Amino acid sequence: AAIVHGVHARAIMGNASSARAQLAGQISNDLASVGHQIALGLADGAATAEPALHLYDTLPFPFSARGRELFDRTRAFITEHVLPNEGRWREALAANTAAGRRWSPIALVEELKAKARAAGLWNFFLPSCAEFGPGSGLSSLDYAPLAELMGCNEWCAEVFNCAAPDTGNMELLAHFGTREQQQTWLQPLLRGEIRSCFAMTEPQSACSDATNVQTRIEREGDEYVINGRKVWTTGAGDPRCKLAIVMGRVVGGGGPSGEADAAGASVRRQQSMVLV
Image (cartoon, rainbow, N blue to C red):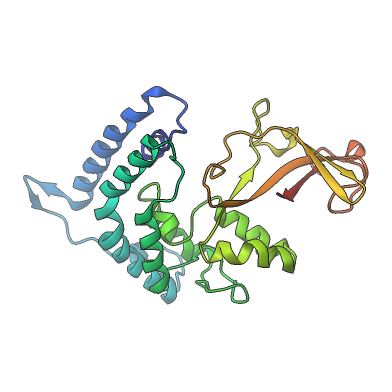
């Protein structure tokens, strides 16, 4: 059901590779309904199973009390504010698409972002970001059940400022960015004021294997010249997108990290990323 839901999500966002992907919506609903019936042990409309245990009581992992608290609060928030508004979101997306501005922000999401941030349900993904802004202080283990909750639809994760590709980009900036880069891009990303994208995929190469990247990053004096073409860059169409992290292959004159000419470097040591 989760895989089929992902296919349907791509169809809604206009990123599906097949015209039949829209049919996945009904399949996803049917599978989810069957799964729900099984989970509840329903027979002829009467519950035959014992009430379900809390998720955290069914898994053999050392979840923290903080993680469990955030899980319960996030689930309640989603139940109250996100799930009842799925119809409104689809209507707003359809209206934006009809007006020729499909990737424009949806007011409903912005409203819920403000509510989630005020409730302290914000930036779960970054465990140690005290010096950059409010964070959850969670481990990856505690974050996993929250990520599952936020995967309930295409837009829920953005409500809590935990949507890709911003999450990964913020982690890169937090770990490796300069102070100036963090002030310029990380801080407004953590506040949910801007969006970003990660430019990796190319039309003529399978860039899920980064050794296939063909975009060239070449140093000319004190500058870098980037030559290449990127496609399917999630989030690039959003008018709030102010930053692209571009992956390319360093050629000539040493790379941004000071490495030697990539022409003689290992195929796995030629790639670098540039903030654009």
